[in-house]
Image 1 (tube, one colour):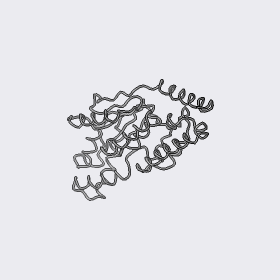
Image 2: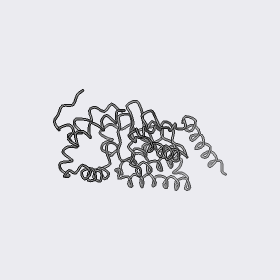
Image 3: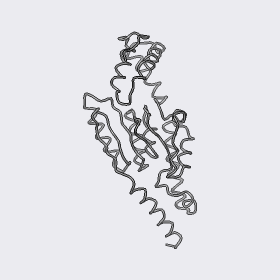
Image 4: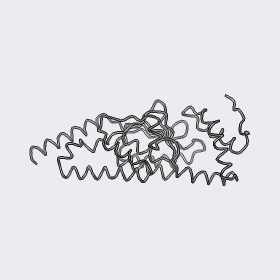
Length: 259
């Protein structure tokens, strides 16, 4: 190993160790509301833990099937796998007002079909990518860098997230987290329901309630306006009941709901 390559290796190792020292393994558990809390750094093995908890959560009578996120990021490969798991199971995610979701945690938001975002969401290049200037000077590292960047681009394309987000993530250095405004979250399709899932769900629910598609959309809009303001970040079941009552006609549309 040449002196130059040794120095580069030591620098990359130091950067990775510094990042690892500040990260805490995630606490993943079923919370008091019967939903999953994911708090901490994403690490290898977290997907398996999520799958186990999901199976347990589905056996319970309560809980609205939401994953609460509070993470600085971590293992990008594991985050991609968890994101695909969230898409397959159609689990919503939530970032509450006092929480944040940074770096590879963003992959879990992108993978979900429904995102409730009240806290802080930000992005930067995953730390294991290393420093772009150092990587560019070494052919092998450059190839690895390009391969990992390609995985991020492919993932966002798979999840139908605008390509601009993948470029922003790849170009933003670790330590320079780019915080999104509410307008940017909307523009990057990181808040609310995935459009493809919404169309599929709308057709299915209209059939379930035996309503014409246009009438179902009208009632759902009424429910959105009346019930969404009640949401305080935790009362999913209350909001769900409110919406159900309006859509089924148990509460007439246009009725003023009690405070």
